[in-house]
Length: 103
Image 1: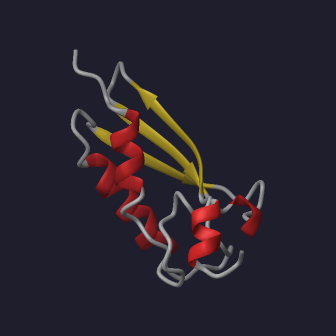
Image 2 (image 1 turned 30 degrees about the vertical axis):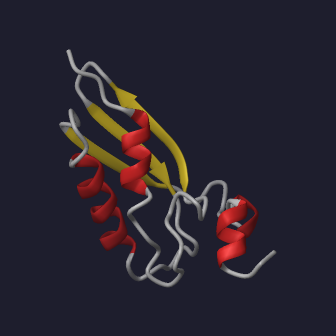
Image 3 (image 1 turned 90 degrees about the vertical axis):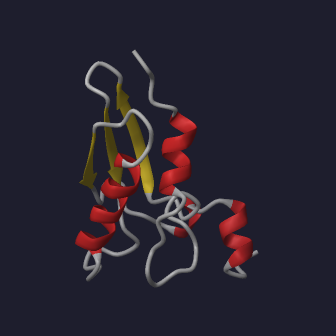
């Protein structure tokens, strides 16, 4: 059975951007967990948003599910949103902080 490549999943997630911040959701620290179930070729992602009332939350979740579903051998992708722990700028990578002029 072919396996799902974790790095390809992460690359797909890096193609998704918060619409208000020009940094991908991985570097922003919005991805909390990526669980790959090889038995059913499913990817389950736990993520957050920069703000609870984000008006494009549904669009961003749909984009994540679509992009990850396009990764080779992925049959389905489910995204759960959580706000525990809440997102903070400390979760961002150094590259993201540089890009946003925070360093």
